[in-house]
Length: 453
Image (cartoon, rainbow, N blue to C red; front, side, top):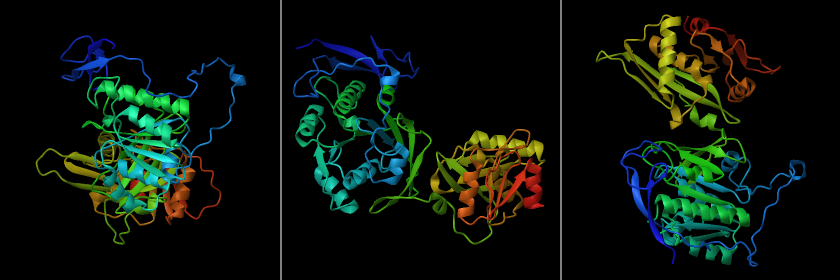
């Protein structure tokens, strides 16, 4: 039996300390250092081959390394494939995080049930009967999905050796524990050790593993920060539970772009893929309402048209309020200052509320012009003509700046039936024939005159 020793770990960043301290010296957080019992033994959790011989890597010249593209596993979920970069890479480790009740388990179970590969779904949070009830609602006739309720990694690896699955799903990493660490499940040591065992298994067997990770009240994935460095892909499943739409974002991806996103709609039968999100993010209201504008934005490789709503009213209590939902509040204050200084609008004594419909968050600076148009529309109580959208950034001097991939934004607006789009005068437009009218502008004063006289 190896010697048992005590170590002190920070629950926020995972840093190890020789003794208890009130403030972690690495992340500067208070009261996050806890004591954990660590027992070191020879690790025999995963045996990659029957011969027991360990594969030794040899150095190769760059020109001698094969550059054949890795064959990805198709998950039959277009949005999930899009975010991953084309499908699951064999031997990869994917971490999916999100708030409680947002639909992480539903998403992965739905994918596991519809896969054409032999899939092992390991749950440490629900019983097999509970999972069966949800499976009957999502996809009752699944033939390749096996359910295992287990939290001990050694037992999980035994079942993997017996079943020989093509894909393994773990729900969740915080519920797993290994015999080689004598601390509670969900602790820093257990999460790090269990993840290390799964990485060794995935890399040596070539079987992709998908992990579900809980998040803290701050919105970060629970456990040490090193957990995100260990895995190949980190996905974030987000959305407002008061809305039906969910967004899957890629925060880290060693095999694809980190700018992609997938959009789902929560229904009673599971998550429905939204292939054309622009149509569902724009309201179908036929009435002319002031304070509403349409922005042509791009998320990853996907162009989106989103609806921006603004409300400008007199400040009742003297101090004006600035509130933004789905938009950067500091950028809103900057745009209001530009309107005050460059366009002469007196908004300092007025409340300004901004909302992006659908419960999504957008960071694209190309929404600046649409935000300003919505604010001015609400301030003057004049509605913007239907069929008009915007795609431009606004600078501090009041100039309208160009944005990237403007051709894709114009084509998306044309596809949805818009007849006019405002872009920067300095944008290089490659489209030759288009039915939509492209209006070029250089300053916001020009936009104000054309829209509101």
